[in-house]
Image (cartoon, rainbow, N blue to C red; front, side, top):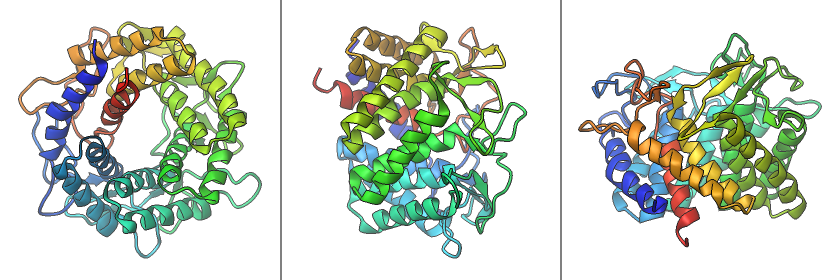
Length: 393
């Protein structure tokens, strides 16, 4: 299989056209919901995470293919983020907006701030618009000054009110627990800072990157269990026996990217060890050709095949093949991609990807095709990473 060629074909012929058709030229941003029947809900609310991920996607598409339409769509997303989603009075971005662009859920979640930094950094790289970089840096300062504890090791806070007073973290908690800290937020702050550091290196961002990598080494990663714990109390003690295979395979390569960006050989070596152990653990525990299982909670395995988990599997095992100098893992990426092509791609006219599949590879008709969490980020990024990593093969 020519994985790079297949990735380029899919992103050009399906992913880009699908999301391009969801632009809201009247109210800004992109329509926030497409149901399973492929009906576009024009009055649906607009999640800021969704808009940030669209800004990221169209920016990276332009960087990959120099398509001026993609840059125009990225600018459209940027204007919506800057003018509607950004809280000019209190700082930070809202959680969601109405379809017309008014604040709806004004929660200031650190995870959400991080995705805005990530997307703005990509847009700056594509457009060279200094105002995008300025806003990314402003949000970086907001995260560091308002979304971290003021004492001790200054761990990241999860959810806060419009003016940055902590509230319950209901948005990134599940399985009957409310987490004060989460692996997921730390991972995506790390991801955002890595991108910001690549486009605009600074001592401040480098320091924060090192601190988050240390947090993964010392608090989030369990060296004895070879896994990432998911939900924690305020001191990063795990509060549930849970392993999220999608996050682990995603983290295995995002940790590598962060360490490599810093250019510190000692950090690179330490993080490479963790990345290899994580990816190999996912391979041994969760890979059932051609897919990765979703998660295991309190000993109960969830074998649902989830769109973003499989997308991250393709990238994660390519990274493992390179990091461990073992090309056999490239075939795992190819197998997962083949499964995606066969079962996840929605080949109805105007379709994109299904959300998930059951054990028999049947899609759930109850899951939307587009909603606040269903976006062109995990799969879009997978295509870009595949092309980047395999272009010289």
